[in-house]
Amino acid sequence: MERIGFLSFGHWGRSRGSQTPTAGDALTQTIELAVAAEELGIDGAYARVHHFARQISSPFPLLAAMAARTSRIELGTGIIDMRYEQPRYMAEAAASADLISGGRLQLGLSRGSPEPAVDGARHFGMTPADGQTDADMAREHTAAFRSAIAGERFAEADPKMAGMAGRLPIEPQSPGLGDRVWWGSGSRPTAVWAAQQGMNLMSSTLLLEDTGTPFHELQHQQILLFREAWAEAGWARTPRVSVSRSVLPITSDLDRQYFGRGGGSDQVGVLDGVLSRFGKSYVGEPDAIVEELRRDSAVRAADTLLLTVPNQLGVEYNARLLETVARDIAPALGWTPATERDAAAA
Image (cartoon, rainbow, N blue to C red; front, side, top):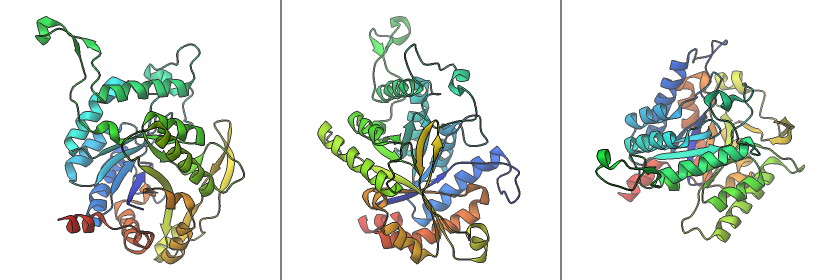
C-alpha cells in the first residue's frame, strides 16, 4: 500500500451528537480535516459528491479552498456524478482548481449512485438522448470533459475578437490533469471499460453485482481484470487503483461508545434494482484490524486505500482516528507517511 487518504461523505444535520449541523460546517470541517491530515503525513483528502441531499454537492470550490490551505496532500473526489455535469464548464472549473493546487487534483468520476430525486439530472438540464441510458449519458459527458482538459479545440474563433481564425480550446489548461482522472467502478465490466479508456480505477465499498464470493475477493477480481485490460490496451503509464474501507480503530471509551458493536460482515441487498454486495467495516483494536486488512486481497492489490470517515463526529475526532491509522495500522501494511518519504527524498 503506497498511499492512504480519507474520504468524507460530507453529511450535515442537527441529529443528536452531530458536530456538523450546517452545510457550512460540513465544508469548513472538510478543509480543516485536510489540513490536519497533511500534518499527519496522510496522502489524500477526498470528498463524495451527492445532489439533492445534505451532503457535499459542488466539489470545485471546496477543492480550491483545500488547495489554498495545504501544500502537499492530494485532493480528490470519490466520485462526481457525471450525469449532472456540463462537461466543458466542469473542465474550466477543474483546471482552475488544479492550477491553484499545483497539480494535486485526483478526480473520481462515475455514473453516480441511487439518489433522493427522481431523474435528478433532468432538473440540471441533462436528459439522455433517445436510445441512451443514464450510464450512456454519464460516459458521453466524461468523454467530452476529458477531451476538453486535453486541449481539444472545438469552438470556432471569431477573428475580430480572437485575432485569429480556427478553433479554440477551453481555458485555462492544466497539463497532466488528464492522467489524474479515475472511474468509480461498481462492477467487473465497468472496471474493464475504465482500463480501455485509460482512466485510473476507483473501487468503492459496494459492488453492483454478487456472485456469492466474499466482497474483497470479488473486488480483487475486478482489480485484476482492470490491470489485464490496461496492459492489453497498451497504455504507457502505470495506472493507479484505490479501494475504500471503513476502518474504525477502538482505542478509547469514546470509540467504544460509538463503534463498540463491531464491524459485522459483508451484506447483500438490492441497490438500484441490482443484487449488490456491500463490504464490511473494520472495527476493533488496531492490531486486530491490521490482521483483518492483511487478509483483504483487494486492499493488498490496490496502491491507495481511502478511509471513509464519520465526518459528523467532527474534525478533532476524525483527526485522532487518522492519527491512529497512520501510527498503528498503516505502517504494518507497508505504508510510509508522506512526511517521511519527503524527508528521505530530500
